[in-house]
Image (cartoon, rainbow, N blue to C red; front, side, top):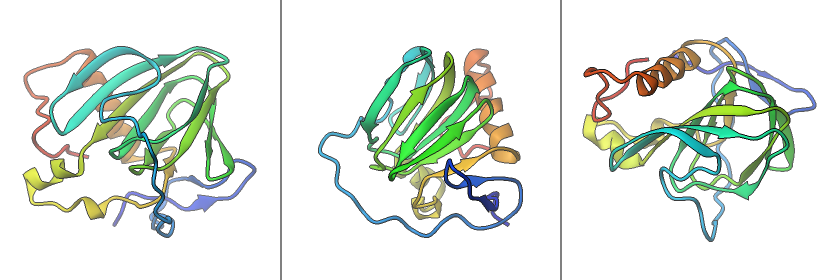
Length: 178
């Protein structure tokens, strides 16, 4: 069963909690003129690990910082390690807190406002990364998703620990165990 969760509507839009509902319906395709390249993030870098097809970065953001609307050229998973922020996406504002996990598809226009100092773990991967494992990138959701608990949040937390204290077992050329 997929590790998604049911939606709870509120003033901040859809948030995923801990059951096994599917992700939202596919989004309309939009073209961006200058998306951020894989491994490029707006926040100040603290730690970075990268190969050709995957980039993992821990970034910090100042209280009051506003990230203008932007998009990335590859799918992005962001784990909020510290801080409170909002994400502006598709005309909606969603609240983000410590342990919120965001999935943002390629070319999805979004922006952020940081209310307190923030620290995020950003994981970005090129769709060809999946080809290393005979997997299809089409298994990814086609719309932005927020997850607030469960195995995906635990997985991202473990990955963050690995880049802070790397060991010989972190191999970015094999699928991550969730």
